[in-house]
Image (cartoon, rainbow, N blue to C red; front, side, top):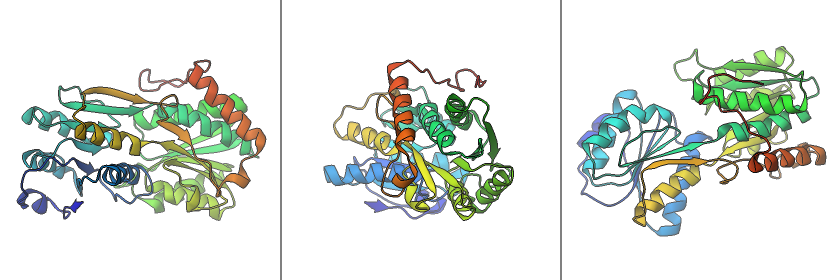
Length: 327
C-alpha cells in the first residue's frame, strides 16, 4: 500500500504513474479514530489481504483538499475512488462529472451520477437495538445520547435509539446532546467527555454516542463515573472493558470492501446500496469485554427486536425521510 503524505501540496505535486489501484479518501480527523474512519481502513485492508492488490489512501486536513485530492487520484487512473462521509458529497458531484471514466464510491450519503455508487445504512435499526439494551441495563430510567453534529444523519440514529429505549420503558427519559459547539465535533474527546459528564449529572446511567473520535471521551467519562457507555461504528467494547455495554456496528468496512472488490472484478455498478440488519450491514457487538454486562433477559430482548425488525413486524422510523421522531 502506497501511503500518500498528508498536505495539499503533497497531494497535488506528487508524480505517480497511472494505475488501476482503488483509492480511499478519509474525512477530517484521524483514520485511526476507533470509529468510522478506522472501519473504512479495515475494509480496505481486508481487500488488500484477500486479493493481494494494493490501494492508495489520503486523509484530508481541511475542506479545501476535498476536490483536489479526488482529481489527483482520478488523473492517476485510480478507480474506484471511495470517500468516507457525507461531507464529500459536493466534491464527488463536481469531480465525478469531470472524470466520467472513473468510478467513485461515497459512504453515508447519496450522489446521483452514472459513475457513483452511494452506500447508506439503516442506522436507525442498529440504534433501536442498542436502545433496547440501554433500557434493560438502566437503573435510573434515564439514558443519554451524544451526537457529533446536530444533522439529519445523526438525528436518524438518535430517533432510532429513542424508539428502542421507549419500547422497553415507555416513560424513560432520554437526554440528547451534541458536541457541535467545537471546531472538531467528530474529533474532540475532551468535549465529548464533558457532554457525557453533564448527562450523568442529570441522572443518565447509560450513554450511547454517535460522535466519531469524540465518542472515545464519552466512553471514558462514563467508565470513570461507574456508568455504562455504548460505542458506535465498530466494536468499541474493549476501549473501557466492563463499562461499555455494547457497540452499534455500522459495517463501513463491508461497504468499502464491496466497492473495492466490485472495481477489481469489473462488476462495479452505480446507484444506491442500502445496508441494514437484513443485509448484515448493521448490528451490535458481543465479545468477552461486555459479556458479563449482558444478561440473558437483555440478550433475548435484543434478539427478539432484531428478528422483528428484519421480518418487518417492527418498522423503525427513518428521520431522514420524514424529519420528525414519533417516539
